[in-house]
Amino acid sequence: MEMESSNMPEQNPSEEMRAPETHPAAMRQPAPSQPAPERMEPMPRKSHGSGSNALVAVLIVILALATVGNGALAIQSNSKVNTANTDLTSAQSANTSLQSSIAQQQTAANTLSANLAALQQTVSKLSGTTTPTPTTTDFVTPAKLIEPQVVYIEVTDRTGGASGSGTIIRSDGYVLTNQHVIAGATSITVTLKTGEKFTATLVNSNADLDAAILKMNTTRTDLPTVTIGSSASVVIGQEILTCGFPLGSDLFAPNAAFGPATFNAGVVSAIRNLPSGNTDNPAFTLDYIQIDADINPGNSGGGLFTLDGKLVGIPSYGFATGINTAIPIDAVKALIQSSVK
Image (cartoon, rainbow, N blue to C red):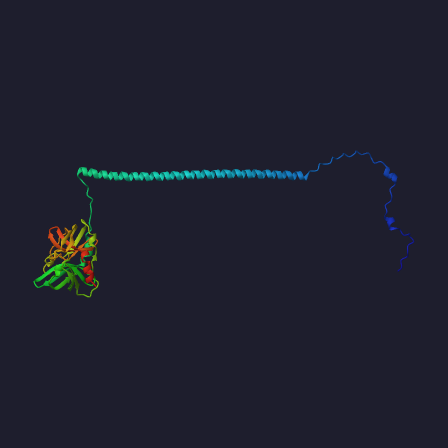
């Protein structure tokens, strides 16, 4: 369907949109009377540079104050440390002085104690009285140790018989005794503490020393043996024990069991150099141990013991009551070593 064209004249789009012009006269009409607006003074502009400088200055002041404060604290701390060190040094010095004073007082006390003891001794001498120190000697312990080591020896000779004592010097049956006990024997019998009897043979002897070594005829190797000491260590006044079978069978009741050994206690009275009492050799002498413990017939060949149970001599001769001698064990050690192999 065709549209009929309009006879209306075409309008210029630009003209159609143009606003109507205002008449100049209208523009010139005075406006209603109004009060003139007040004049606004411009606000002063802040300077950013000066604010930053002030802030930096404040920070510097704060840092300076902090530094000064830290310095003051450090000085105060150092002062306290120095004061503490001074106090410690003073305390150490005082302690040293105190220790020295204590040592001096202790020395003075010791001196005083020694002087008091000397004074007491002087007073005792002036008064003629002394207070003895009580002592108790233990003979029980060594006696129990020694007795099983000592043997009873019986000898048969052409004239009859005799008896004596001896000590077991080796566990397989070697016995030490006096030479005069077995001199001229045709038979020898050794009896132990237990009552056991063994025949014995002579191994070696020395008449000048009055010493002899026997060997029991037994295969046993567990026999109780003496501990050989040294006669060189014996001193005058030393307490000793002797052990043996004085008077032999006379001390055993008839038909009674074998009796115990006999102990005697005493002291070393002297170390006396004498010629041998068993030979006629005048050139031979020994430093005999003189003791006050009794030695009777039958004691010969037994043992002279220290209180710790060591054999230091062989009782041999009794001259009188309280005057008896023993052969020093050191004199017969060479004979023992050459006989017991």
